[in-house]
Image (cartoon, rainbow, N blue to C red; front, side, top):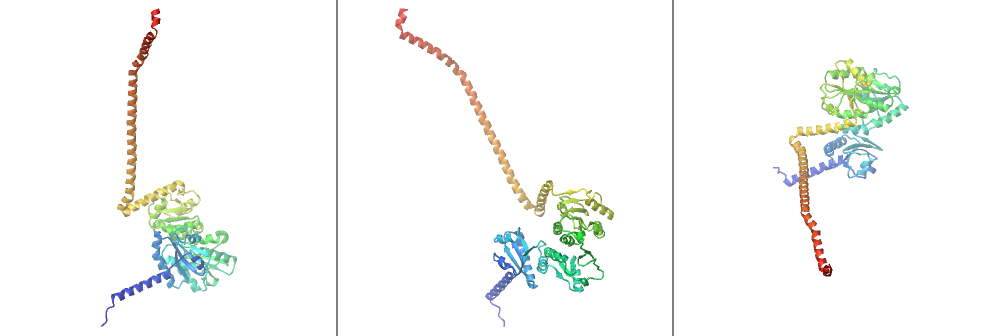
Length: 452
């Protein structure tokens, strides 16, 4: 007969299991200190710089341990750590940390910032991409086909050693935070792809391919930064931020997947040579984000053009229903005949502050009316009481001043009444003095009287 284990034995087993799990977690995410500066050079590190009081840092923490576990189980050479930026502010400043949380991949003397969504898959993909070589080789047609299926946008250098290849490698080391870069020989290309010359840098996307031309496209980095997006894509807040970093870009998009979206897709494909240099085409589901962006209301569906450099936007003066009308609208923005709205002037900044404050208050009241009344009602009540107290104090002081002035006036009147009563007495005084003087003279000179 099997006996049940003693409760103390179960408790010890649970304790050992807990300690094992804790040690495993600590092993996959290392807590770093100021000695990290000297020991990091030989490894590739993915580091989360955090602050203990930061709410976003606390939200990222469980995701960060999942990232560490994923990289550890996959055999990645990337080591995962975290550092309290407030405790080691000197280290944080040295790595250029300006806010929390900040995710950086440290590779030799280089530090790469992560600016993507804070999800496990996105962070792991970023770590694996940046930790590897800046330019990866495609040795066969099978590998080339595999990468074509895996990536929506694929950059490949074709040819041998050349000055263009050196530029390509330097550019890849800078922009690898955004996408992959490959190199291959001309033999791996499908028969349908023909290159005008070798060496060449080619981007494959949207079911087609486009070759870099230094004389037409300018710098290689700016060309890659523009072409790393599909010609037509779904736009959200993060994508909009990334597009804004590429420079002055006009973004044309609809706020719903209806007829307007189909028109934009046709323009993106059929008029690429005319508009690709200045425009990015896409769509956005719903109109909440665009309403907050332009601080107004747009109907759904709508077509809008946004200038990412100065926050100006353009709306068509009439409904766009045909391809010709849409092309005319885009050309009017390019030649300056379309009326610009919004902008980043002082008036718009003040309007933005007021709009954000109003939006915050409305969102609080919609989510929790009781909390909204407490947060905004209590301060208003206190301010009202203070104003009432100030006004009451001023009125009381005024009343006291009036009473004092009344009393002063009455005292002055009493003084004026007393002065006439004393006047006759003052006049009689000299006469009496005269009489007394005569009597004294008579008493002093009796002989003079006898002589008379």
